[in-house]
Image 1 (tube, rainbow, N blue to C red):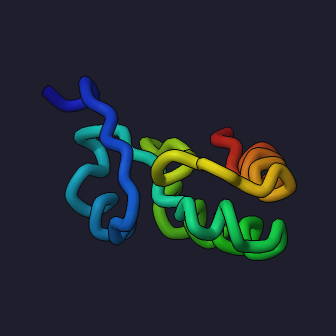
Image 2 (image 1 turned 90 degrees about the horizontal axis):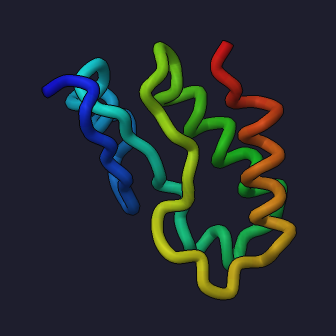
Length: 91
């Protein structure tokens, strides 16, 4: 039934997921583990803002990593969390 499931994705076109699941299921993820490990905090911030702009409008999106974050750069994890808190809060 609508509103009773959560889908978490990795390597997925989130705009397409929003089209198919928006209003029916909550969905999240898709911050690449490779970016979390080898990217810069600025790259994470830019990616997260774009992801929020693309799919968070009208609710239903959960900002999350896409998969396991082995060997993640701690600064990148902070960038993910801080950007989500400052840029992606539902009001």
